[in-house]
Length: 293
View 1 (cartoon, rainbow, N blue to C red):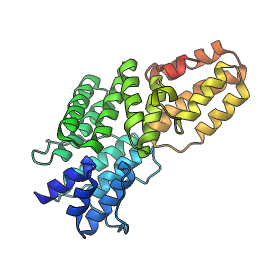
View 2: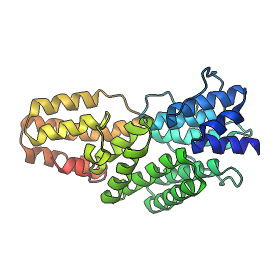
View 3: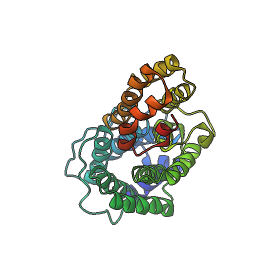
């Protein structure tokens, strides 16, 4: 029971409670350090390098939220008390890498934080399989459960999943509202992921009420230059975007956009750019980030 209470405090962003329950346990102290980076609160002064299921899932969240600026955790799952969390860590990492995801066989009935994370994993599995209606249902349930349980950290994950499903089902107005709200409320560690999704859904810095981070800022810069027919500047922004390191799934989205625009921009003309981007737009959800060009 103490372990479940510590996990709840960790994912609810309750620094004092999580720190008190962590005590001197090396794995818990390591998890506190990861949570501090992810949720923007002070962590322990001396963070050990111990591994454990909570460390792995928090590192997986940081890897996803930062679009790969953090090394993902090992994908292996061991049959022990932390297998549920390790399975979630492996699934989050697999999504970022564009690999297949195995949904959890059953939702955990005791640990609310694990249950919400497993709901998100089920949604990601459905999303990668193209089962968009099922993905939407899982995303809705996860976002409602995270809010009801007061798991503020996992709300970011659940609402990102809901926004992603809205974008992939071409409900771009809803996706923009969700990502705009996340861009204004989520800690900076989440900005690369949220900003990218916001840009592809058609949002910009005005929706975020702050400057957007890379790679979203580089894509919107390329779009703005193309609209003004500043082709050299647009190509420079596209080159910077193409060189930006990303996990495989997000790199594939980026490459579709860059590839569609680069050839047409070399020939000049807004009509040629828009025409060349048609296939890219279809494959990333008919995003207004393409069609404004």
